Image 1 (cartoon, rainbow, N blue to C red):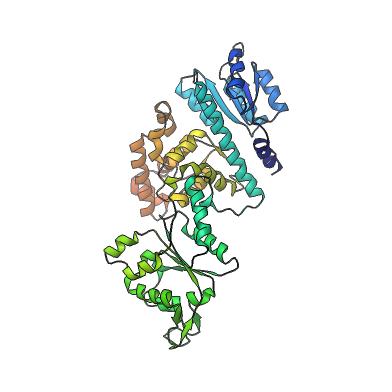
Image 2: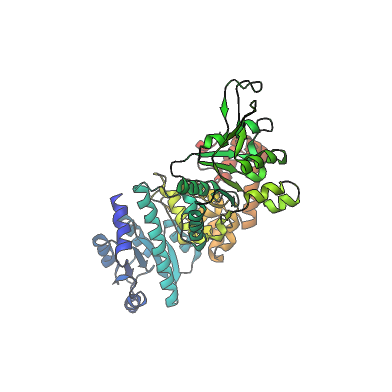
Length: 468
């Protein structure tokens, strides 16, 4: 990881170094002025000078023309050589090229971004800034991995929403009972553990899944039982509240708890006493609670699905976990953190357009879904670059975000609505066949070879080994 540290320090400790390679010498004079005070710029008019510079210096980004006079080589040929010598640099093509097949070839090769000539000065500056920001995020994730950072994915980022959440976590550490509200996949248990760790660093953290409590065993789970209290009770059991011993009981998915069980929970929260099943003696218990739910409890109270008295008891202090769609600027850090956790994927990068597609998606499954999609992108992408077409295969809903000249070629043989429909049809067949791809092919009336080819196009399988 020495190279990671060196590259990260190069971004953080000095002005980023940019290589500009273009046979338009007037343009070479303009770029240092455009990026004055932000970047150190080296400009050269010939390919040979650029190749020599790359072998001597480490560049953070390369601004590369596509066509050079009196040279049969193209910017794509040069890019491949740059990539060999200076793998850490992000390459931005700036050219008057308009042929979409040529552009697709560039993006598939791993070019970070394409800028059409002529272009406004502000666009150049914005693209360079965005490229350098993503680069810094990428190497920060790798650096954290090399140092064994324990930072949790759900709280990565610097958006206003996540900064406010961090402040609220510190405040909640001094409160006895807290209710966390948030959609599925936002990281409610992560936040609960952070509150508990700040409040009682060495305390116990007992998790109770309220939606999965058995009707007949709920009292045993929460309050414990004595030996012989009922059939099968062959030993003494300590319940969740007693086991906490001054620590925290995390009541996960509280909104899913049946109304018939809620009265028993209300009593222990009010009195801080438990009575084991099969025992008349009440025991004083010391615990703090953090409850969590994705359910709208106020509405559940109105619909008689949740006890009003329990709601007012637990909702004195509430903390809302923001959904991912309210902190889209945190997605690059989340993505690169996820990739960095895998030795096989840690060196992979995303084109800026691919990252933009991820930031255009609403993420109904929130951070949990983003992590799953990122891991899948890392596995399925060919080479070290995750491209637009990889994202489109997993999230066909983002296709309309693509520029019209690139969309058709990147999506492949399917249009947007057709791609979504086709993918759902294949997924349904795979589920119906309990994951047996051969049986799924039969359900769809396709040969095994045709099923495999189409499933691979849709991002549902990677190779024949994934077929049963």
